[in-house]
Length: 310
Ligand code: CA2
Image (cartoon, rainbow, N blue to C red):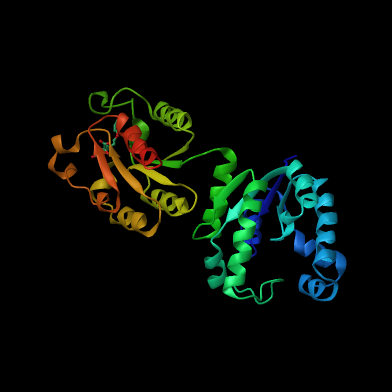
């Protein structure tokens, strides 16, 4: 059974939403400490704060933290102030990986509805002051710090990447007939087979602490679906659209519709070949195009994105 995954950070940074997504993707159970306390105490956290005071609430947090730390396979979203007490954090830290979801305090205050949150009804200045005080505590408790992204799906993806020590996730997309690599026309496309190309690119990715997943199809619709599904799941697409390059406006539109940068690759130097191969209708939606470098072109394209990390 998996160790726990513990999410900490300021109230409103997205711990619960991102935590639920992570639990789903990892097949783990999601637990929210505030919710657990509300269930056990029979009233809302705000009521506890108002009627019993903060210390009474923190005692509850300590009991719940110790109880959860004794279990496995949980994604635990911690109350924003939970890491303030080391008696809460120490058992949780020992039970798994702690991830700090880092979201700017001003962004939280301006964009998250805090009416119903305990300690949420304060001025912007007071909120920012509390955020500034807590930052070093969150940083010191966490094994990983992940900056909150535009969508919870993206943030969840970044958490998974951080935990796996992965820097970039590549999708290698190959279009029609590229499954025939190595079997026909070796004078143009070389002798390496499609399977061997995929293995080579996976190895190249792994050598650079990245992952590469390969997909090939002879069907335009399947390629469109793969591009749509890449949003939020991959950091970059390396695509050889095959002959679709020269006429698929649908692939052009799909690339424009997603927020994943793509580099187009051609094994052969298309400009030395028939006139119809000189024109790419898909390249305008790409960061750039590599052609004529053989299979190395795929690695050159991956290298471009790796360079961007430096
Ligand atoms: O040079 C490239 O990579 C191309 O994208 C390959 C496409 C071609 O239509 C483009 O103009 C340029 C064709 C891929 C066909 O692949 C084969 C591989 C081995 C044997 C036969 C075809």
